[in-house]
Image (cartoon, rainbow, N blue to C red; front, side, top):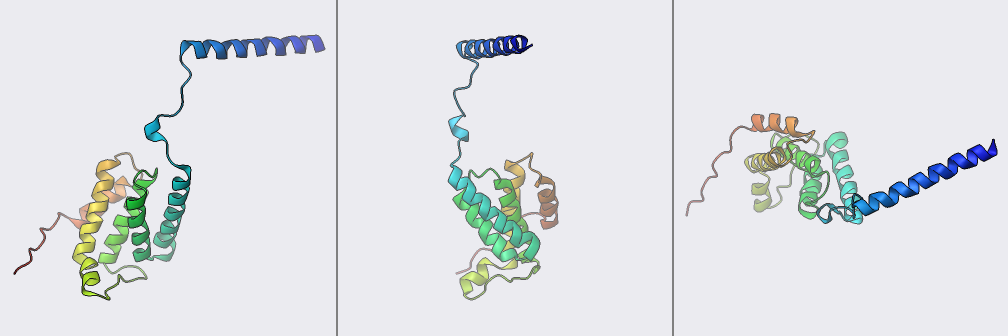
Length: 165
């Protein structure tokens, strides 16, 4: 009985080694991942942490200003992040909610520049930019449908008022 088991193991080993060398000679073994898809592991890890914090602010705390700022930095600092579609969604929706006065935080208005940057009209335009980018660049995203609904709620882009001298 032991001989039969040893014989079966030997035959299986021979076939597996033979198949591996045949595949290598045929050129069907991949040389490695495509260089365009290689991501820096540490950057991905850092970006993932930032997204988790932003998600916590957005969903649990309703701290839309904090979520918006985290996502804004994430989108700028990690443009190749694998979950950038979720980052764009949270940034867009946070901006929209801030424009509507929702949430537990208010945007800063300490200086005239900050007050203008975080005016409801500018926040709505920022939301439109993030959500439009999500819809256009990530057609298979799980967040696309919600983004389209939010864009419908935002309506068409308003022309920016020109500064008068």
